[in-house]
Image (tube, rainbow, N blue to C red):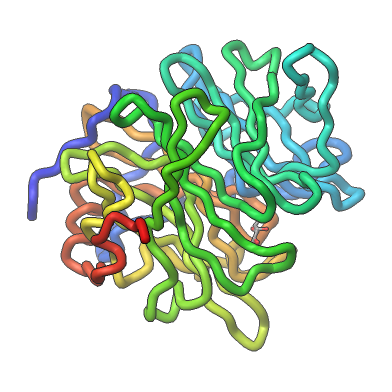
Length: 339
Ligand code: BMA
C-alpha cells in the first residue's frame, strides 16, 4: 500500500464514522443516511445533489431544492456538524454585476468551491438551453453572477480548488438538450474566470458496465501527493432507465487533463433503499466532499435517488490505493486530450 497524503488544510470537525468491521469496500456509507429527508423546507419537496464547505468554524452549503412546482433552485443551508442542516426558506437571491436581481428560470446541481477566500458556485441553468451558470460570494449574503463560461449544452461544472500554473481550471461535460445519452469530462482554463479556453479532453465513458453510457464531474478535485483525486459519476442504461454510480480517478497534478489512474470498479453504486427508491431510482450523484489534511479522512456528499442527500466516508490511502489497484486507464485517458 502506497503512503499517500492529502495536500489540504486540516478540518478536525469533519463528519466521520470508522469503516464498519468486515467492510471491504473502499467507500462506506454513513449509518444514519439519508442526512436530508423529503420536504425539508416549506415549498421545497426534495433537496439533493448539493455542495458544502467549511465556513466560520462550522459548515455552509448551496443546495439543490426541488420546489413543489417542480422547478429546481438554489438554497443556502448551514450546519454546525455538516450532518444536521437548516435551510433559508427563500431561494438564494443572485444579483448581476450592477446589483440587479438575476433569476434564471431554473438552477440545479450546484458545486461550491473556495479559491483564495472567494466562494464560487457553479450550477446548471437555462441559457437558451442547459448551460453552466456561475456566481461568487465572500460573505454568503451577496451572490454576484459571473458570465456563463460556456455555450449550451453543458452540465456538471466543477472548479479546481486552486489555480494551476496561474490559471483557474474547470471541468465540464458538454451534452445535449435532453437526458443526454453521451458525455465525456473536459478541462478548460481561464486567467480571469470569464474567458475560458485551452479545452482538453480528460476522460470519456468506459467499457465497464457502470460507466458505459456517460460520465460527469462530481466533487471538486481533491489534491493528494499522488495527484488530483476526482470523484465523479458514471452512468449505465437499463430497461428502467439510467443508473448513476460513483467512480474515482487520479489526475496529474500539473497537467490534470492527463489521467494517471482510473478505477475500473465503481466506488459506490445504488444499493440502499434511499438510493434505489425515490423520485428517480438508482442514483448516487456526488457533488461535494470535505477532507481533513491531518488524518486523511474524506466525507463525500451525494444526492440519492434525486430525493435525499447522503454521506459516505473514505480515507485518502484507502481510496487512492484502491483506484491504483483497479486501474484501467487507457491511452486516451493518459494523453493530454488535445487533437
Ligand atoms: C442528470 C441530472 C442530475 C440528476 C440525474 C439523475 O441528468 O439532471 O441532476 O440527478 O440526471 O436523474
